[in-house]
Length: 145
Ligand SMILES: CC(C)(COP(=O)(O)OP(=O)(O)OC[C@H]1O[C@@H](n2cnc3c(N)ncnc32)[C@H](O)[C@@H]1OP(=O)(O)O)[C@@H](O)C(=O)NCCC(=O)NCCS
Image 1: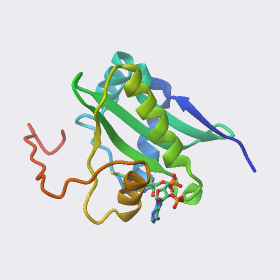
Image 2: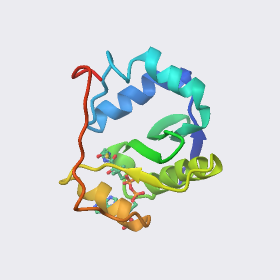
Image 3: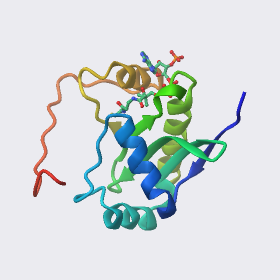
């Protein structure tokens, strides 16, 4: 069994992160908040919010934490298809949660599309409470953001 390493990501991982998201069916917004400039700005501000999973130096999983100082958020978790079902998403989530807690964050939230059963099950397994009564709203400057 090859060793899976959970590690903090840096701007040098940018291309690999985008490729992993695209392969996982989560296209990035390269002209908006996933542009090199925006993403590396976020990384430099909060270096501990970007976690990756590697096998033999290959990036096979990623998660991005974020915080508004009041609540924490888990974003854009993805594991390469052939490595799913081995607890990698779980390890990434726990690493990101730990970072947020160390920042003093006590409420951690995540958004999942209604038909994304693996992610919903992952959230249940890790103790997240579902809120069927809440409706998500957003306002964007453009579709790129
Ligand atoms: C969601 C995703 C990250 C899960 O990654 P993973 O490494 O396979 O997940 P894990 O092995 O850590 O699974 C942990 C738990 O999640 C749940 N889970 C994961 N995959 C599941 C599946 N296909 N069906 C049902 N439950 C699943 C289970 O409760 C599992 O625990 P168990 O193995 O003890 O039953 C992965 O399926 C993925 O990359 N999907 C595409 C990208 C995506 O949709 N991201 C989420 C955007 S919000």
